[in-house]
Image (cartoon, rainbow, N blue to C red; front, top):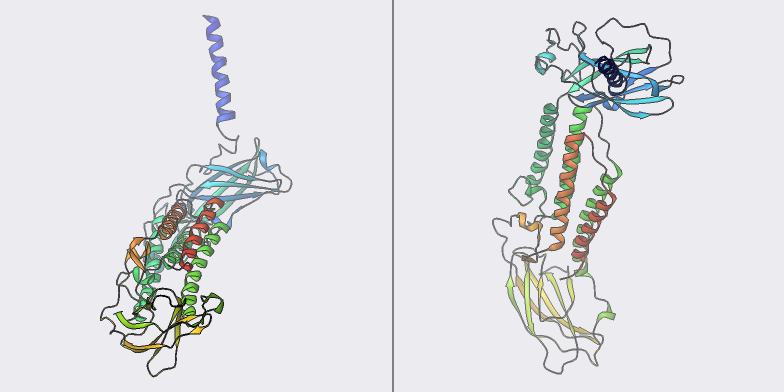
Amino acid sequence: MTTARAKRPAWLGLAACLWAGVLLPGGPAAAADCNAAPAKPVPSDIVVTVDPATGWQPRGGQVRIVVESAAQKLKDIDVVVCFRWSNKDGPFLSPAVVQAAEFTAAKAVYRVTVPDLKWVDSTWSERLRRKPPTNAGQPTQFDNGGMVPVADVKVIVGSTDSTLATAFLEVGVTSVWTATLMTLVCVLIAHALLYIWAWRRKVPGWSPWMRLISTREGYASLSQAQIMLWSFLFGAGAVYVMSLSGSLINIPTGALVLLGIAGATTVGAKIQGANAQAAAAAPPASGNLPTGATAPAAPVGVVMVASTDHSVTLQWALPAAGAVPAVYTVRYSRQAFADWRSDDLIKESSHRISRLLPNTAYDFQVVARNDKGESTPVPITVTTQNAPATPRQPRWSDLVVTPQDPAEIDVTRVQMLFFTLISVAFVAIKLINSYMIPDIPDGFMLLMGISNGVYLSAKFVPD
């Protein structure tokens, strides 16, 4: 019985030593009382500062405390950090959670979680009228025009047997709700300015968002939607992070690459449209004409079979059996104007001419051509219809179908839209949770590049 009683205290003593020396961090400094009279520090060259990038943080956010010394072994020290509002009459809270983040020979960086400080009783308008809160435990200093309350931060740096340094710092404590509200206000103002500009320029679309991504023909543009999404996301993220941390957001290389991909796709789509219009006015290369023994005969029975406010469809009869090979050219110009343009290398017996002006008389000429020459032009005059009172309104379905085939899903558009929404959602979630734009994996950036490249390549392939 006596033996058992002797062994039991020894086991408990060993457990107590393990709990105090292993499970609990540090020695005397870790157990320091921030409200007790400060111990006289041992002379040292230790300098304690707050990382300027984390000079503002919300409750639950992490402040980076930097400890620098040229002579002290920083890995052997303990750090205690306590917060209170900037009111010298108020007590410090219990030590905050401290995590080691970085160690070098002369510098140590710690991540310190901002505790749940009391909410400020006064309003911003009261503080602007120089009426700060006077209750005990409330802040007396405010940053950013009275919007951000300031907290005192006491940092005790010590070793196992002495206190090496005591520093008093200041940290602005921001609010996630305030940052969210400010971000929403900025997004709404930016959107309203763009919408007013689009409305004054008569861009098609009644939807508040559709009008920002509509083309002049009244179609929703997928490439414009993509660049608009990224622009609003990064702009809102910059306001959100700046409201929380007081510093501009860091945009990693991967995010910049995504912006470049989206911008290149938008520019490429506009280049394709400009090339298509310029190609209509360019003469065909003679090497692309079919080979024949003689010049072809003129087409027969040229008629107009359809007309809209911006297009005309012509049809004609094929030459008689045994005629020499030929392709067709349709030349057109506004009546009484010499602004001739042409659509060339037409192999069918009908053709639709687009990008015309409404309620305008056009002179058309249909010519058969081969490498030996061209036939006599067959003229016809057609007046386009009046423009509709209500222009075409863009639809969300325009993002996944082509204007030429509205009844068919374009898989290249679906792929690009799908991966864009996934990447935007990923970046937005990381922004909200970590207050920073995440690094985009190389494989996903390659996937986005391929997706946008396939979409853009499909626009250059003729139907």
